[in-house]
Amino acid sequence: MIYQNILTGIKNEILYITINREKKLNALNKDTLTELADVIAFVQTSDEVKAVLLTGAGEKAFVAGADISEFSSYTAEQGEALARNGQITVFDAIENSSKPFLAAINGFALGGGLELAMACHIRLAADTAKLGLPEVTLGLIPGYGGTQRLTQLVGKGRAAEMIMTAEMITAERAEKIGLVNHVVAAGDLISRSEEILNKIRQRAPLAISAAIRAVNAVYCEGINGFETEIQEFGKRFGNEDFNEGVSAFLEKRAPVFKGR
Image 1 (cartoon, rainbow, N blue to C red):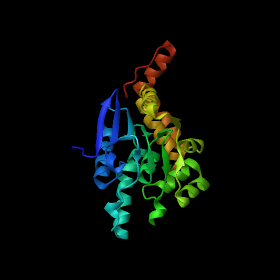
Image 2: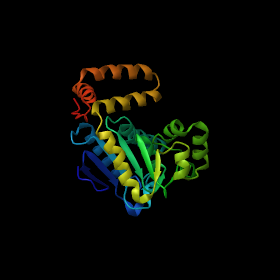
Image 3: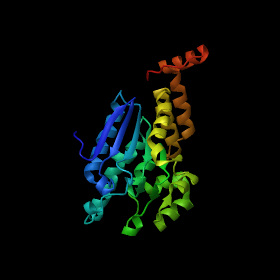
Image 4: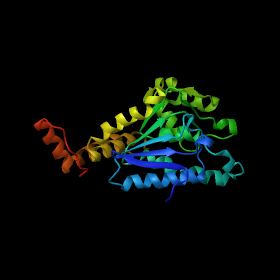
């Protein structure tokens, strides 16, 4: 697929995805979501990619919400289909990815933009960023997992307040309540994000994937997260990366993992 709304590139086993609709504050329209779904699927099958850095074009916005003009005349059935398809192909696909996604929040992360960041495994924000879920000002509620993931990250009371007041919060406040991992100067956002991802990509890829599944199991209804952890732990003993990790530890050298 030739992308019109996102930019992609691979460097040092990191896939960079940039939402590239700067004049629209990188708002998510159907075409952008389709392109994101395609590149997310590519990540799962690519041997070139060990981690993903997701950000927005320009200095103003990460993603300032959904493109309202596209769904302003939708029926209830169309609205439900929009949310269901987006959640499955983009937001849930990111959260359940076998490879880590990091959101570098360079500006406004509102509505679907904040939901996109929350689907990622790690979030860094520029000190100038503003975050919020303003859907109730349109007579809507978040439709891409916002009510669920925000509650998981910051707790029921804080999530309810953010969603029902529709007020934006600062990056500093977001870090304080656990919504983002780190706040950095805007000029350092990408380099700090790369620093974290470069650490991750030096670790055993199969173990990283297993860790993602085990952490996600905390929130999966009907799944015992402790049992998931036990099973994933046991599986690691049967692969080459485990043998390499142990040998490197005993030999006091850096391991060279191959994802096998």
